[in-house]
Image (cartoon, rainbow, N blue to C red; front, side):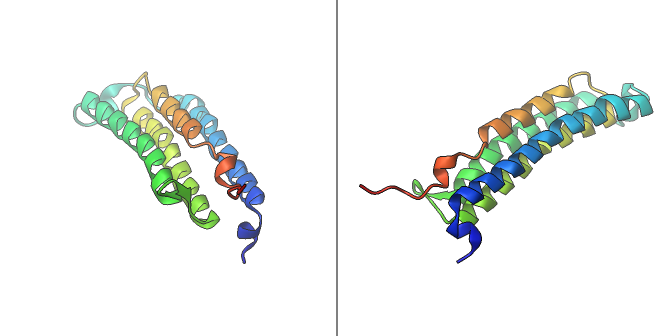
Length: 147
């Protein structure tokens, strides 16, 4: 028996710490965009070859899709027919969901670095909302109670 299987409360606390670390990366990425990239780059649309508006809209759609996919993957990988799987599968589902939730923020960095779009912050908001939707719920980790 693994330690995680023996202690569901510990598995929940570990995922909560990982969630906090992932969420803390969003302001760090925002700082990188607003202070490091904006000071080091020429802020105009000439950096992108082609139509920047098409790239912006396509990337925004991809960010929304990945954020929604994070919630769906968490449900598919961590649960089966209304009952939770093992703690290991549940932990893996949350890690995949956290990784997918962070990718819109990375897309925001890419949008700012390539097109200098003024609404790059929308990607960070999408990422934050995905993290709120993927908050690790304690009742998923508690063993079912029988009467």
